Image (cartoon, rainbow, N blue to C red):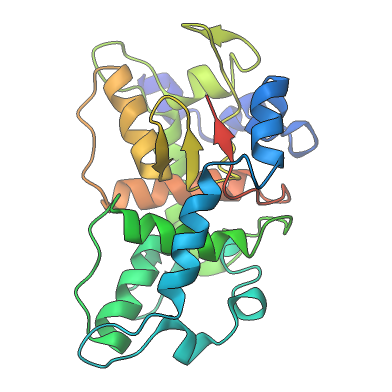
Length: 251
């Protein structure tokens, strides 16, 4: 592990070249692709519709809706999710889209933050991210984010848990293979929050990361932990140029 972590630039040779990067969609079977492509069959769209309703619903002691500040999400939110996690000056570090939604609730709506993985937070996140469907990911291009991208990359390369595996061992070294019957993808987070058939519901990227950590028998970070934000930032920067797909469908 020490050799792996200290290799620095040499590890770049093992990473997937930008021109070879593929969304998880490319690894899916025809039935899963068809479900994602058809908005009337994609179960994630139910959350998008819920998010659309929440967008115009006044809440908190300020009695404000998201729409009061941001207007029509089809215009104001287009491209927003494609650049998250983004640097937030108020806290001096990157924040995720979920955290941005909760900051807006606390600061502008004077409302209680929504719990991680709650239906309302997933719905709002899905609705906002859906406005960027087809938009190329641009996350990580802010110079202020460089140390956090590097932190996320280190975490991606770091072996964890009783199985002593790193994210890179599956998603750089063994993509296009199968594990327990499921395809191993490149871990390009193009469609979050996404509907996972295994979960039978929509879930965030952090939920997926926690599942991976449990799979290698490692202690998962808490939702919203700086480590998860850095890892999400690295993954999104690694997927730069790929189009957003929210809500994606995966096995």
